[in-house]
Length: 413
Image (tube, rainbow, N blue to C red; front, side, top):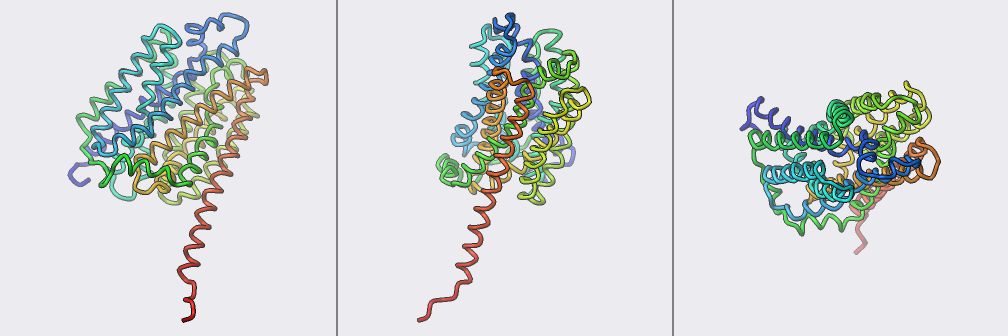
């Protein structure tokens, strides 16, 4: 956008990324504070069955993911004609209210309800903010736009989540969520003062956005995202108990493990945005292969301090490298419905979050050990790779048929 000078442009991009930072905090901070939340809200945490209590508390992660799945396509359809800056401001308001309510709710059930409400705006934010960032950067920068906004999420995992985890461990998990609500409030003010308006897509309408679901490829790619990336969440959801019960380290080490994973995420998202703009197909397939390899390494090596730290870094890098490519892929198979394509990507990622947290908790509660969730993650990531290969195979077959019909010799008169 040539109406913005360089300083204003980067201020606007940072404001949008700050919203992603807040989303990284609100989505991932529970993973480092599960023991504290369990002790406060789940009576079973004081009994002998600690794994059962942790698995129940893991529903805070699962219910947030379900809120994203519900809200992302719904908001994308209902706001098809809403200018993107106005939409982003409204979504940030929902985050402030929902996150503050999560901190203040007195019972486990009300906390779950507040987490669900806060999550409704999650997917639409990444879609709308990613569009704004790409618009500010100029044509041909869709992957970079996505990576800048999601880069805030990775920065949260590198710096914010470890610090908020320390705050939650020392002053209670409720203080941690109030701090997250304050981050959202600051992001709201930053977007209000720096980000220029962007109109909705020409011809956009709820019907046009919903039309994306007529494409079998949209469903297939969404399934690949939802199943394939759940391998990451099967690891990430249980980092705290793996650190203390498997590697034998203290709770004070958990923030450092999260910081290592966040450092990997930061590098992964930066490379992933550039790679997605250069070669989308290769980025998706290479990303899934990397996720399978790194989660398997984590499952093998996380019983020792060095393996835990290195494995967390590698899993974080592989998981975020693939995200810009997956979002660009969904937008590509949903022409005329960019916001819906981006929203479906976020819904699928949070289906993955739900699958990873729920199934990971189930295998742990079944007595298979904390690292069983990582081996489950390997299998899920392999399934995602196979689904992605099938999707690209269908594209190639369709292109071959089109070429064949184009050059087919005319029938004799």
